[in-house]
Every structure is written in structure tokens, then in C-alpha cells.
Amino acid sequence: MTARKIDPHAIDGKFPAPTTRYAVVVIGAGEAGCAAAVAAAQGGASVLLVDENPVSGSAIGNDVPWFFGARATTAVGNSGRMIETVFTNMPWLEAAIEAGVELQLGVCAWGVYRNGPLVGSLPGQVVGLADAERSWLVGFDRLVLATGARDLALPFPGWNQPGVMGAAALRMLVERYEAFAGRRLVILGSHDLGLETALLAHAKGLEVVAVLEVRGAPQGDPALLDQVKAAGIAIQCGVHPVEVQGGIDGVERLVLSDGSTLTCDSVVLAIGLVPMIELHDALNGARTFDPMRGGHIPQPDGAISAVGLCAGLPDTGFDHAAYRFDWLGALGGACGGDTIVCQCEEMTLADLTGVQPPRYLDRPPALQQRSLKTLLADGPANQDQIKRLTRTGMGQCQGRRCRDAVAMILAVESGTELSALPLATHRAPVRPLPLRIIADWEESEEMRTGWDVWMGIPTQWVPYADIGTPYEEENRRVLGGAMAL
Image (tube, rainbow, N blue to C red; front, side, top):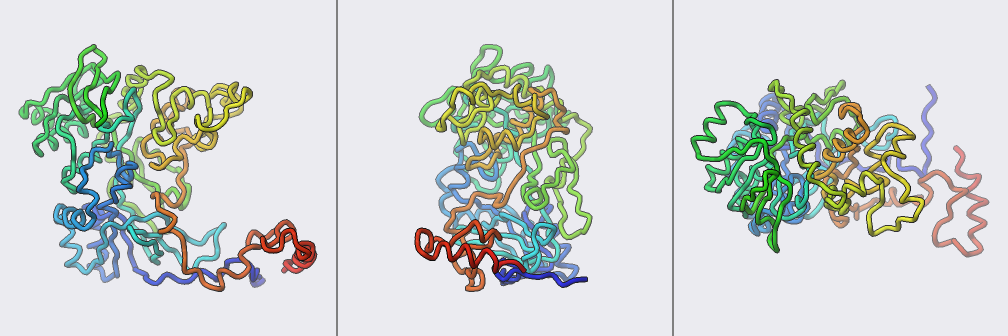
């Protein structure tokens, strides 16, 4: 075999090896991730267990990684106190520490990198980590993803006001953070997730005004239903919200389809969960399972695996997809063209179906003739294409509030099965990070050498300092022939 020739101006071999390396790195310190870490440590492996909780106040404000809906108290701004609180409320972590697992809280994983067909410059497979002060790379032999699941958020009039949030976010704020600012809740959905959320809120001393169900009867486990009824929590069936009304602090009341109004300060969406597959997806772009219905992340080489909810939702026999589309149909029926779909970019339903750019960009007449219908004439709906054309899903929350709802809307509008519709891809960093944290300020001299011709097109690139000087043509002449290896 002919030895591979290395371009001295390329980055091959210039990335330094990570300063730390573990046999096993586990992302997510919930019970599933902790159990995986303990098992690996008891087998004699060196193990790092990281969890992004407590996330920073700014991330919570951007609804990352859960749909917090601006209902966190100011306590989340005290990171030291939050770490103590989170650790205290995760008692299973003590077993990991006793087993010799290295634990790091308040640390998020923002990317995974491995050599492959398109990348050959890394010293080994690494995972990118970051806290509030810095980012760094950690080497691993095996990576276990235990990132859990987030809420399915569906748009309806007024859902972009503070106080509309997800059930997983509520659980995090009341159980781990002890930092929930609401008092009176209305919960959407009477399947198990909604009933469990109602019981949790009731146990924490919150007032559950009602559980709303779009179908004609409660959908959850009978045992849970009995507990909800025993707690005196009302379940209203055959109704759905048509509008959230609020004031300076957000939600104040919820108008229902039967004309009644419920006074509340928080509306909790408990319609369904979506596995958090961002890290795996950003690495491989693999779309071999439908995260809206569950499934399992395949890893033929065994280097990366998934446990817990991120590996797939449990199969309970309930048709979650049909249930979610029932809710989409009901809530969507209340939407007008001016209903916000993507909160970050303030894109409306009319903007989405019209395939228009954000309102802060020009919309010339020719562009205004475009619509989803004209786009579908050229081929099947593709959410990545819609994202590029409209910026829907490209904001601070990185699509966590709208990605799945947009996929469902596109499926309905195009008459396509959701499982057949390509979902929007994820790209690293899968967590929003300030440039001051993710930037590599300690770049080596080797890395700096030849940076301006790394793109491999020397005849089309002249160093900035030489542009407009007598050396410009000399650069073109010399570099044009000297780069061929």
C-alpha cells in the first residue's frame, strides 16, 4: 500500500492529544447513566460521569436543554448553591463516587469527534465538554449516552408567553433544582406523562387547576387515574386551549375550546417526550429510527452506546404518534397565520407554510410567490431545506421548542408519513456556548502554520497581508505550483 502523503499545510497530525482520557465516558448522570458508570467502574475501567445540571441561568432562559418556559426562580443564578441542591436531590450519585467514578456536575457535552471518511486528523476519538469557564476535549475508548428525553412542544396562540413550559422541565425545576416560580398549573395531556406530572406537582404543594385531554376520555394508566382523582385533581376531556392570555409576568389565564377560562400562571405541555439524540446525530447524521415513536440507536462498533430514554421510549402499546397528531390537530385548529411557531426567530405559521425568511430580512416579490406547495412540486419535504430557507429552528434554543412540531406540520401539509420525513439534522456544538468558551486560545505554533491555505486552493487564496501589494501576484505564481504533492 502506498503511504499517504501529508500536506504540510493541512491540519493532519497537528491536533494535540487530549490531556485526559478514560476507558468509559458517560454523558448524563440520571439513574440510567449512573448505573452504567457504576457497572463500568466495578469492571475495573476508568470512568468519567458528567451531567450538565445545573445548567446556567442563561441556558435555562433559552430553554436549553428543556422547555423551561421562564418559570425558574432567581436561585438558578447561584451556581454553587445549585450544584449542592442538584447533588442532594440525586442520591444515586453517592454509589458512583464510592465505586471510583469521577463525577463532574454542571458540565455539558457539546460534540463527539472520530476519524472516518471525512476526518483523519484527530489523535483519537474525543468528546467535547464545557462548563461555565472553559471547554476541553476528553479521549475515550467507550462513550455511553444517557441524555434522557425532552418535551414535545406544540404551538398554539400565546404559547410563546412566559409560563408555557414542558413537563420534563417542570420535573427538573421542582425535583432537582427546587427553583420553580409558578403556583397554579394547567396540564395538557392525560396520558401517563400528564398524570404523573399532575401528581408530582400536587405532592410539591402546587395547585393543579385541571388536566386537559383533547380526546373524549382520559388516556392514562387506570391506577394513575385513581390517584389523580383521589388527589382531587379535575380532568376535563374533549377540550383544548385556544389561547393563552397574560400580562407582564406571562400566563394569567387559559381560554378553552368550550368557551370557559381557567386562571393559572403556568401551562404545562405533557403531550409526549422526544429522545435527546443530538450528540449521536451530530456525529453520524444517522436517521435509522424515528425519535417521535421511539427506537434504538445502532452502534455496530460498540464504541458508542445509549441507555435510558435517549435510546428510545418504552413501548407501552399506546399509539403515541396518533395521540400527538390529535393534539396537533386541535391546537393547530386554534392557530392563525400569525401564530408564532419558532419563538427564537419569531417565525409564524404563515411564514413557515409560505417558506418565507424571517421578517428582519427582505422579502422581494419573487420570494413572496414561494410557498410550501411550490416547494413540494420540486420534491419531498425536507426539514433541513425548510430550516435553511426560513431559519425556523436556527435560534438560541437550537430547535428544541419547534423542531418536532415543524416536522409534524410538514408531514400534515405534504401528506407524508412522519417516519418518512427527513428530520432536521443536528450539528456540533449541540449546546449553545459563548465564543469565549469554545474558542481555542492556546493554539500551537504547528496549528498556526499555513492556516491561510488549509482550504487547499492556493491559486484562489492570497494571505490577507499581501492583498493589494506587489506580493499578491508573487503569491499566486509561487503557491500555484508549490502545493502539489
